[in-house]
Image 1 (cartoon, helix red, strand yellow):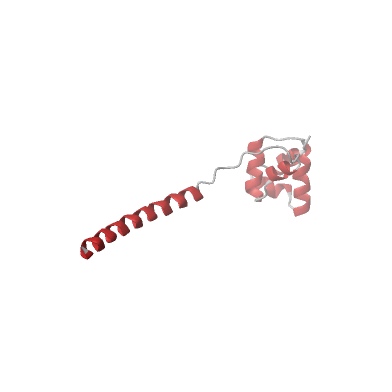
Image 2: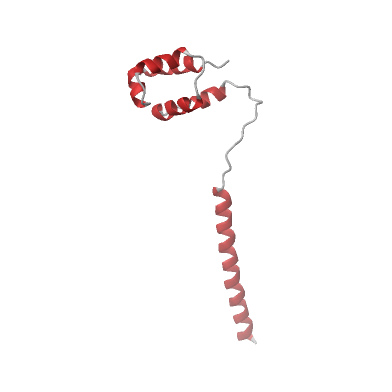
Length: 110
């Protein structure tokens, strides 16, 4: 089992972060943070809130503890697809211009 409470406590200790400070960052009190550190698990929504508050990816820490042969779902990167579409559109436009220029040259030459 992955103990998120211990993970959080280790982070707080390493960063010398007061529980009351973290509590303020997540809209809770220091006692709530103390309770999170004493539990072996917590709701993902709360862990996500702590990630945003501390700018630390606890989910990555959890994932790093899983076996390497576990699969993941990577987000789809559409940026390259968009770039390719733009390049294709530019090349098609350039091709049209070159065809017109070629036709004009053929007419001029007779």
